[in-house]
Image (cartoon, rainbow, N blue to C red; front, side, top):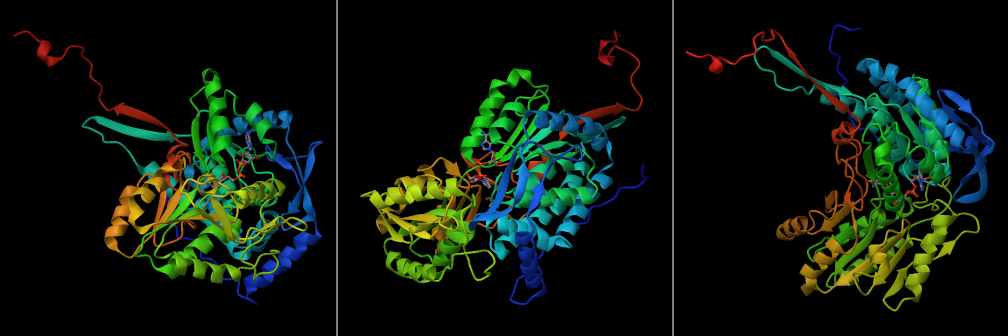
Length: 543
Ligand SMILES: NC(=O)c1ccc[n+]([C@@H]2O[C@H](COP(=O)([O-])OP(=O)(O)OC[C@H]3O[C@@H](n4cnc5c(N)ncnc54)[C@H](O)[C@@H]3O)[C@@H](O)[C@H]2O)c1
Ligand SMILES: N[C@@H](CCC=O)C(=O)O
């Protein structure tokens, strides 16, 4: 019980460390990488606060050195998933009723542990397990994760303050209850921070959660789970259950007590879950809230007034950082014919300098793609382009999985704006460019808007203000995150709330109040101070 209103302090973004050669953070990270490589670990399930080991295990490997095993993780089956549901349901009442400042403190403490004593450990696990360079790892598992925790705590407080009007003699109030059941979170491999956010955002709002991490991101996700426990997260509030997606879909999704589903991953998987929910709609205690951020086919559209150096830089960083495995990655570009000779020359110059290899070499911009499936899928697109009369591979195109899953930064030149690699998500370091005649600007903008079913991120490059206005208007529904003269990746919590619509998701903006509202269940309360005691209205009285 407290007799005061407490305030979460206004958050600021976690500063990104530079990892310059010889800097303390660089030295600590290099030592931690070697330590984790030399000491394979076991990752248990965590259900009701207890470590659970099952009969099924799988290896966690380095994508850039696939024979190198970082350890093994245990896989939940039906029995453990049902245990996790019971744990979440058991923990719910006490967690929902814990006063907000105590709930918030747990997540704020987790952010400080992450950015403090566990910085090198989390970053190294993310680099080794998901093949990220130090900068990509720092902006993901450290800065974005801490930002999600600190900004969401502040946003929850701001939502809780919102109250309705009251009239004379009446006090109206709203309570922001948790949902009436548990929340299921299924998370992707590419951002550890997304795993952390999808599980903690509902928990912050008083919900209990089953968290299914991606099988190719278990190590860093598990270390984050350990931080939450050290920060004081009570048993059963978040249950960590690596498992097969199909088992989660079969056991957890149709469960009558599933009240919310928080997903990030491919459009196909979200659609499948949505249909499963539809098929089970009569069985739920309450309508489950469905929040999904899904795939993208993100564009860069250049106008003839674009600055060529800025455009080239955006293409290279937007398409190839983290091997193009960002839902926001630039994967199609529209370049006017008048600029193409200079853009082509600059692309060749810049891409020839890009280094690809092991994460321990901090001079590499790129590392490996996540696994064999992904490697084969990307290679399939490159083979298709190579054999097609409608495209040519202009730069790169090489793939080598003898040591790690390496794919060169690749530029495909397409003859039509609807060529396969201009419209389908590849999720690798591949950008397709369509060079449009300068007098076909209108048709090309239209194609950019309609050629794919996605609408996640997009960037326009122009120096002519009228062109910027025209492109921003014509492409207003083509992207949930729209950039002017910048690459379409790298949204920052609190600065560019992230998410898209159409086939790219429900656009419930990760790391924003809009997302948090989805995990709250308002109860409106009207209290009348002096209730009326007569039934008839004054106008009914006869004179
Ligand atoms: N819009 C966004 O904010 C955003 C952010 C990151 C990634 N993504 C998208 O995620 C995809 C890449 O990530 P990924 O490869 O991890 O995606 P994925 O869809 O393959 O997997 C996502 C999660 O779903 C699980 N899963 C797979 N099949 C399932 C099933 N049948 N039932 C239940 N769960 C299942 C996976 O195990 C994983 O945990 C890309 O399409 C990318 O655009 C989107
Ligand atoms: N929020 C990240 C993308 C997350 C998806 O993979 C960005 O803006 O680049």
